[in-house]
Length: 316
Image 1 (cartoon, rainbow, N blue to C red):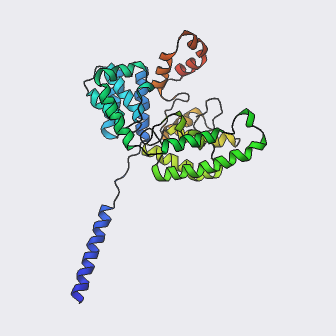
Image 2: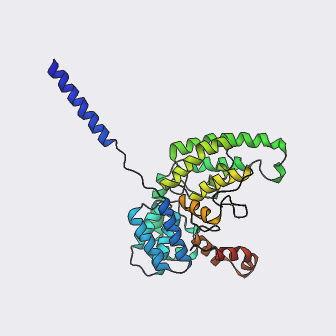
Image 3: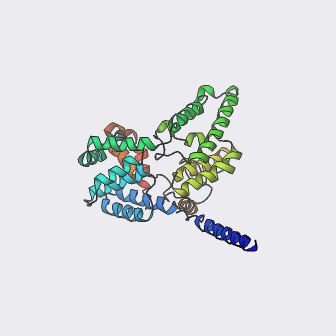
């Protein structure tokens, strides 16, 4: 009997030991350095240094799994093509389309022309279907509904106190839904649903109550940033708006025309700590360049001041 009990204890011990070993989690990569390198590659692209932009991204992707595929991957393909790099363009487009809510009409003609050179319409549709087959069913429609309700009683004609209760009621319901989404699916981004302007959760986050924002949403969003699921600017605006709305100065300068709490040197360091570039005015240079190329003469005239500000604050 003693022998049987001893044998059972040994089995239990080794079983537990095995479980302990297999339950050890592989430490997650912190994506803060990743974002900073992408911003550097972005600024190099703006300066027409396509080769160095490509080299930075190519080196980065050897260590990190590329995450915000819609932006990083298009930058990688463009910089490779414009610097005559010998990469498998079909394979790169396949990765982009299968892992992201990529839509041909989203990009400018330069990327579309590269796509058309290497990918057939049949391949594009096949890869697009593969992405659509693995997205979270119903997340798109849920987020669209939440955004519609979020904006229902906002705007000048709803500024009176009579609509405050209605807004607060909707915001409270949206808070609960967003918590459930975060805890169940993670951060809604272009890898898990058909992301569009109508499905972005940034506006909903900015209408969360102070207490739940600082105790749940802020740390949760920062966690998503470090995991690579969420853009650092989401966290910055969430924090900065909280302080500005409470009569204080912002931390990360995500609101360009409002005062900052610290001097520019400390502000730049704080921005880099959460994955933002140290420049205090613009983030993705490639977006600026695409925007600039899309303007005609009249539009350039109308946007002179903004363009001047962008050029003055290029990432160094």
